[in-house]
Length: 348
Image 1: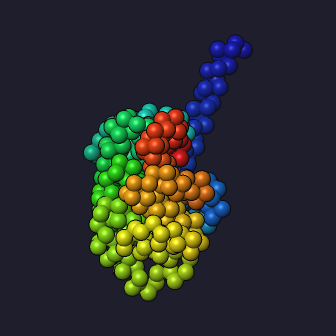
Image 2: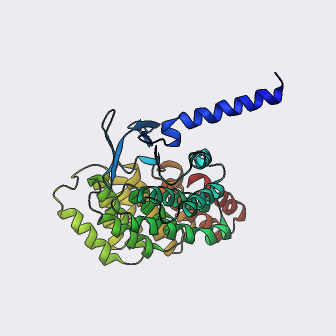
Image 3: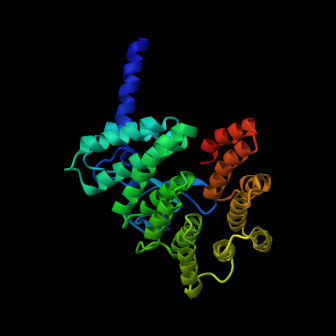
């Protein structure tokens, strides 16, 4: 057998296998493939019939578990009507992240090709992946290129979140948009979007509290301290809000930051709390206060704590690394400023 004939036979068998794979390419009645992080943080994929809501993704078959919106990152629908099987597979192959711009453009092209007549589920699927990859494409940029791309990506993500408040995707898109707004220094927009996320009906209670705490932090940075204190008061009065643990630690830190942001008091509260994310919030606000007081070298050490030690929360680490770029520029250390600017895509 010639090598050319062998190649064509191999290709034919490969395409036949893809066409027969219900979870990858979507035959009628096929199961959906849910990609998510399990309790150990391991990325797993499960084939199941599902239902979707702001509460998460409910597996109707198999373990019948409810997966939190914070843990789900992608669903490959088994039967997304309006998309050719080969086109869906081609888009899925781009999910490795090596070319975010191509992934974004591919999903945008599929959405346009599907048209207005496509089922809402299909349009939501394609719009979500387009918005997510628009964010990832912006995340890969630095400097002026990031400043040009990030506003468009943030608006795409925020627009999707606002249009899909009854689906699990509202959580990842709203949070991604808020982080981009924060990096751009538009904390008012971040706070407004997070406030809308807090109001989403059906959101899991822990995520409701997380969104409310993030909103309070954004309000403080936007100079809206009374509004931040009002949100924190609401959490204090909520009988279900945890009396101890990470959320309570974060609220404790934000209380101090909302009052005045006094460096000495912030330093004390960081030492008091035990949750790493709460400590990251505290040292970032401490760095902000030190910068405002004209002490960039002290701020440098605070932000470094959030970057190197208390780096469990991506949003706080990204904020710290971004601030370190400006701090080193203020200190006249252009080499380190460039070093941290280059690190931003890796920590986002």
